[in-house]
Image: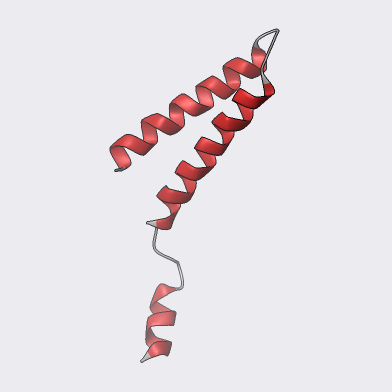
Length: 61
């Protein structure tokens, strides 16, 4: 899954920057590219364990 998300996020940011720099940049394409990037970031960061996870696990017991 990570092998699919990371290239998709890179492509979305490249498209967003390209649309921003072009003379007739389309705002909708830029917004969609940023949304795709943010969704990818949320999916990648959801797999990162919390810094306080050990404390929460001890409190549950």
